[in-house]
Length: 180
Image 1 (cartoon, rainbow, N blue to C red):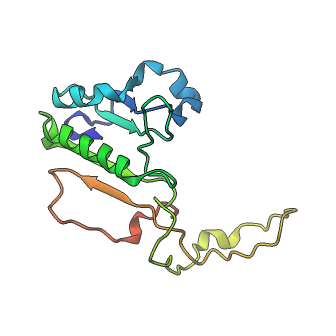
Image 2: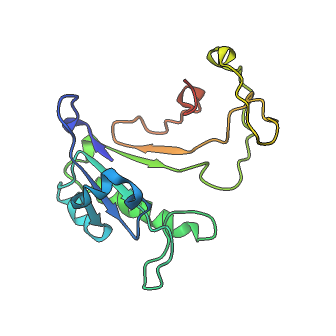
């Protein structure tokens, strides 16, 4: 999440990370040094509806059932998708009740490809000419069988904001995260 009125390029941006369970982010050295930025997800709704979110807010779902009443809400395979849907719904409703909603972007990102199956084959692409002049690198592994003429799987992202026209759908390869 981020709010547009708090965005400028000259000052560092405040941020918070609300975690719904044990977080994989603790492995990051920078974040370990900023543990004061981590908050229990249970505080998110109150902070959002009272307008107390910083410029950037990250929400980490629970990645696993903890055996103590917290259930996975990450939508990763082998866990019920409805828990992740409930988390998204709760975040959305808290944001729409926030005094900052009119300048907020709720960005839902999935890692890898957001699931196991994609009904659309990756498109064929022209290899970027910048790679044509790179020297060959010897390696001891199996021979290269992938010719890099296809994009990888699609990575879903959902943008939710009152600043975006209703029913906007972008299916544009200009947002490919692999392009140089």
